[in-house]
Image (cartoon, rainbow, N blue to C red; front, side, top):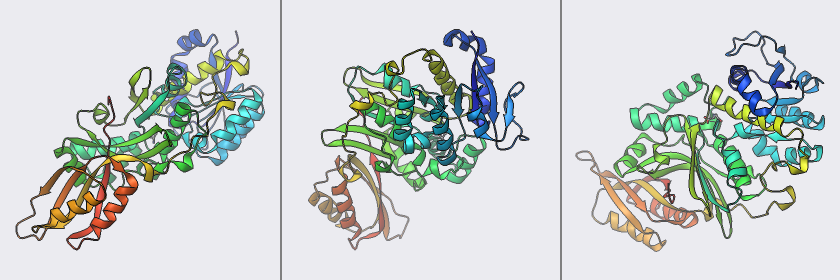
Length: 438
Ligand code: HSE
């Protein structure tokens, strides 16, 4: 059978990795797909740039529309990122009846509802395995492998750059900016690294995971998003002393009232599996009612790990070419007419335990005052550690762990603690997650 002809938009880190994997594993991939997969044309902004791949035999252009419009191109692979141009190109490919494979989490998180609707109407697939957790086949696992389960929650380390920074801060005491610069050099970080360190990239991915886990529309705007940029080295140290590690987590949890959708740093017990996922590695735990907790671990960024997911999607697309569109796996795992309208809960309704750090006057009765304020708000304290102030210093650092409480109650309690005359400055708070089976 003739090879399937692919047009590639973008020849950067992931584009280059995809060309390399397709070339190196050509035979193996053809044995799986039933046909060879051949990149016939590719677009890149700068044709003179040094590449990580050999582009011999691939027609190169600076015009991505030329690739989408090329009648010889049967499947379009979008790897340019961003939401504007990428959306235009993907929608154009879909309108032309071409299948699309994309690694673009921002595109799917923001515009996936519309894109999937258009793809459904056109009878084509828009595949997006590479958009979440790099090479880990988490979309396939949730959408197909766990299809018999009612998913209860999922929690993951889904931004490699943040995980790399937190790991290096803890294990090597390195400075935030220094580690971020290294992540950029290694090609892990987003074009705009604030997407990594402010949690936006993780929120894109979590939005996608929640949609396919619970059968709800993509709702990026409803996700609570907090990054690691304000994590201080002393919190990394205190967490360690208390038997925890700080990880940046994306958490989606089904509750009777709706769905929690939140991305933020969290203290995780040091013995938990997720606490031991280090460097640029990603891991996603998914708890289903039938299977219990499951764990998916692997490289969440980088040229070939991400290409692994892109190529897997290409193989799926080729295998499904002869399938009736109604019988393909639905984009969001659930049939389009069976998507639920369960609300996404505001973060004020989340329930978690907390780590609190504050600077307090080193005087009798101060701890009792703080405990009274917390007690009045219904917050029970699990542990308190007072850091010995330097000789002659008036103020001491107080670190506390609380039991689980509604976030709104914690907001009110923190405001009341900060209003005490014995407290200097603001209270640092980091959520604590004890994930069952994690
Ligand atoms: N910037 C992302 C990360 C790349 O660090 O995880 C993969 O999506």
